Image (cartoon, rainbow, N blue to C red):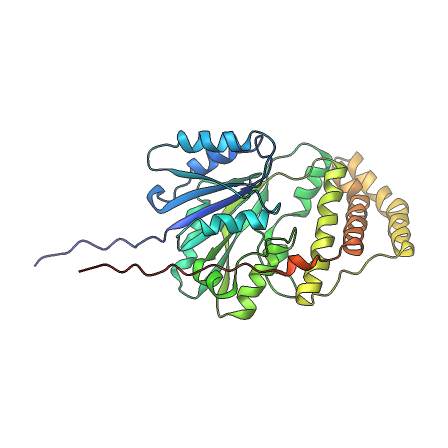
Length: 330
């Protein structure tokens, strides 16, 4: 009796798309992470999109492409017309014919199994979006340790969004057919585009979202107060934009009275108790300052939400043309 060899599963072709703006400091580590991926090199290309950088990003991208190891495909692309990470991602999508697009950022460090675990759920033909997890790179500053303690960047927060689940583009994969159906990223949007595209796919089609917790990228937390406030102001702007695009409920802002009450409660009640624990070695500086840091974040988010106004051009959705069938003469 003849036995036939077992068929190996056919892996989907994937394009990993990374928007980059002034990324020369991050590129060496990022490219090392891409080189370490276990997903078979012949099924993946890495499209690194320079979004009008003014440092050595373009030179480093070309060098990485020229020196890529055998079988590894790194393609430098440029998006110099629109200063937006979403426009850069669209440029990468248009340059690809892959079945699936995987997204991460220049300041992320994908673990070696990241892409394989991110793509595996697409074996289910109903899945249109896969969300991987985001964990912190080791940090030494107080604010980095605070953000790590609070799991600020974890996708679990966005997956529990009361309006609709979504994943951040730092670790996200989308099926081409889903984008053909609902359109690409809004190219002039400067924040909130990840939620917008995930919501459009889920609310305007039958495609499902799946969470892949072992598909991990590490991300560097903000290390200075200025960077942290900028991050939370951006969260506020995002909420305002998504309110205008989708009707999302605006975040409740703390009144001056509520803000002072929480700060006073921390000074009078929380700080003495946590201080005693710290002396006993049972609490850290992060525990001591958790409340005031959180209040700073809340105020920054409120400022961003109050100041933001969605530009009319940010409503524009770009579209992906379906690949044309090629006629073959007999």
